[in-house]
Image (cartoon, rainbow over all chains, first blue to last red; front, side):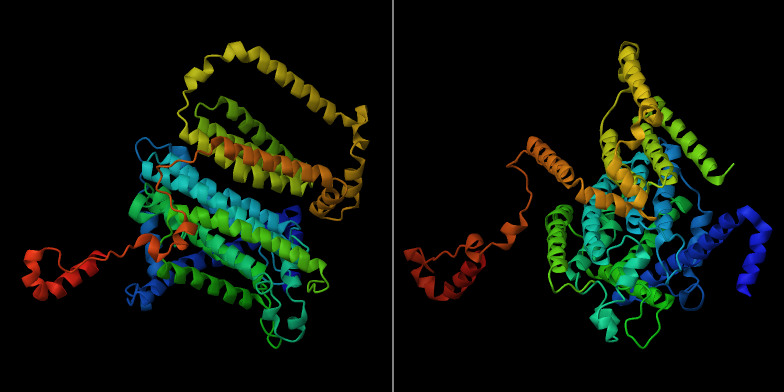
Length: 350
Length: 225
């Protein structure tokens, strides 16, 4: 039925079909993503409220469920104010450069076996490359605002993001070594094999256990890449107001907001794919599927909200020390450990 | 026209335009951003040639790291564009000569079959020919087997450059309030707190009061420690 329908459309569109079909798939990824972003902001405020023994948003709609819509409408109708001597073109390019990589990276994330927009062989490299472009949004916004607070935020952010990209990239090398592939689907499939997976306890065969230190480094570096608490010196409300976002208002601010939350979901998805077996079921008697990936992403998101409610902000020199003097040596050491492990008779990744 | 040739002309046109804007833009920050755009389109062209690793490495290394630092430096500098333009006519002959040499070199590469260049890197060409789909793997295999010594040598040279750059600019300042976490953790109580033994009464005249003030001075001594 579905295939017949597709074939009819294919014949009707002719050579344009691949383009249209890809666009349809992109829309199918983006709409749930943007809805998740909207409700992630709501969920964050609720969770933070409960952790602070407050109620959180509860006025708009039943249990406050329409709050994200109200916020979105408000931001949409607000005026976008340009500072007097701001570089107007770059002032608009800034938010665009922030959100574009956050959305483009979803192209290679596998939602289930074979359910991926672009099943490219160098998927991990693509993620690293596009991820490294995200910093431009913040730098351009910080410079174009012509404000010292925004510029300080931009400088802090570029230093922080470049530092933690090194740790993240090195952490992924261990994952690549045990998977033997740069393809994300292959990386997930590799985690379905092993002694524990054959015994029906698949969650012990996932990468998080043999690569535990690397997993910790990746997760914490992910939080630092997101510029979220406790690594949110980029915004640092108490010191530099809101960093690169201080001059933005209305929809241009909302785009930064969307980018941050889309990136949160993305980092969560990457942690799930690299270390928690993506769409794989944790136990043998339950089927694999998209809902497992969704559950793992949700757990990761809750972790981000949880640490935001728990930890105070890191001092800037502590952030730099953690990145360069703790994480980078640790990941380098673990590459060595995994290399020796794989060459020894105790190799578990065959 | 095929879709790929349309993409080629699109990438090439945007790349030429942005490369031109790099040297004509008045604002240095705009120039750097145009250079980033040019890199992006070059990566797109390489992807069309199925050189996926080169394309992604270009974005990761140049766009993601080098150009960010470039932008960083350009934003911090106070560049007077008029002063830079002063020497334009004086430097034009040198610039034209360098540009001419580059055009000749590129023409030599592009007309490779005429000069017999197409069978030059035989080993790499073989690896690329045998690669199925992923040339990242083929490139890695070639790099870490046939070219492992040049590769390691290049990385050691880069490491030396990093250390040299750090050593040239590192000034150990004495007046900073930077903290050393290792020292902070290694601290002992005896490094920070000094217990001073004091007689509870120092003045002989106050000896009458000694009995009544005894508890009070003890408390005070305790606080000062």
